Image 1 (cartoon, rainbow, N blue to C red):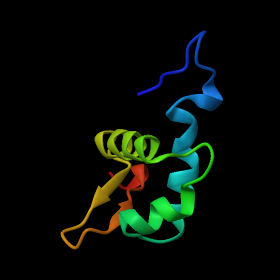
Image 2: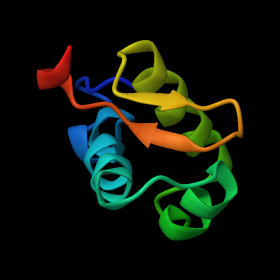
Image 3: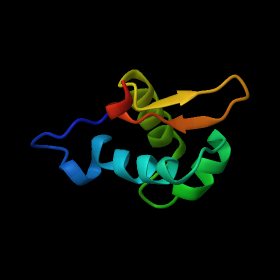
Image 4: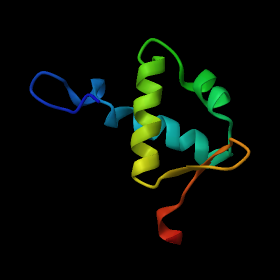
Length: 78
């Protein structure tokens, strides 16, 4: 996981990728491969996607249903 530091600017850190993923999941639930197709690009590789999803899951911001669908978890509902 790339944390912001003197060497790694925030825009290149894992944290900077959270808003893009969360904004897509707020719109609707998606399968992981569908979500990856939406975010992949020059600044978002497979390793970045896995790191972001791991972090968001551990932070309780996304959950994975039994059917394999990712869902945004609204923190105000906790």
